[in-house]
Length: 255
Image 1 (cartoon, one colour):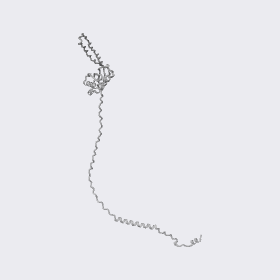
Image 2 (image 1 turned 120 degrees about the horizontal axis):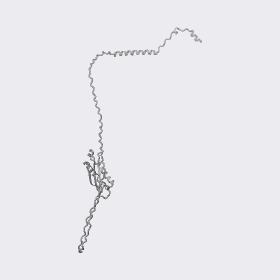
Image 3 (image 1 turned 120 degrees about the vertical axis):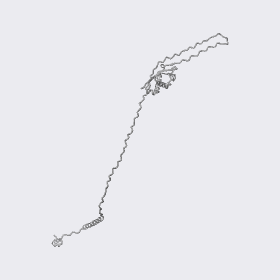
Image 4 (image 1 turned 90 degrees about the vertical axis):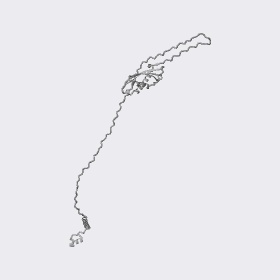
C-alpha cells in the first residue's frame, strides 16, 4: 500500500460525503412535460369549439302516413302468334308412263298369182300379090304391114323379190305404223289386224295400196296413213319387171 492510499484511509470525510447523490435533471424529462402541457391546452380548445358548435336536436315531428290501396296494374297479355308450319310440298303425282304399243307386223306372204304370160299376137303374114305385068307406066303398090303389139307388162310377185328388200319394206311400214298409232285407239285398247297388198314401181314409188279391213275404221285409217307415210320405198333391184307386188299385215295389239 502506498502512502497516498494510507493517508486517504486515515483522513476523515465530511458528512456530506456519505449522503446519496441527487440525480441530475434530464433534458428529455423537461421536454416531456412541455408536450403534455401543449396537449392539454389543445384538448381544452377542441372541447370549447365542439361545445360552441353543438346545436341541440329538436324533437322529431310526427309523420302521418296515408295508406292508399292500389290495384296492381294489369300485366299485358303476351300474344304469342301460333307457329305456322311451313307448307310441305305435296309431291306431284307422276303420270303413269304410257306404254306405247308398237304394232307388230306379222308378214304373211301370200302366194301371188302367177304372172300372166305375155300373149304373143301374131301379125298377119305379108302377102305380096304379083299382078300381071301391066303396062310399063303402072305398078301395083306393096301392102302396108300391120303395127306390132306393145310389149306386155311383167309383174313380179313377192317370191321373186329378194328377201332383204322385202324385210326392209316391212320394217319401214312397222316404224311408220308405230308413229301413226291413233291415241284414241291406244286409250280404248283397240286391237286388230289390217292386211295390205302393195304394188310398187321399179323406182320404189307406191302405185297401188289395197287394204283388208280389220273391222275397225280407226285402225284401217291408221294403217293406210302409215303405209302412205312410209312410201316411197328404196329402189328395187333390176329384175326386169314393170311392177312388183308385196303382201303383209299390220297387227295392232294393246299392251
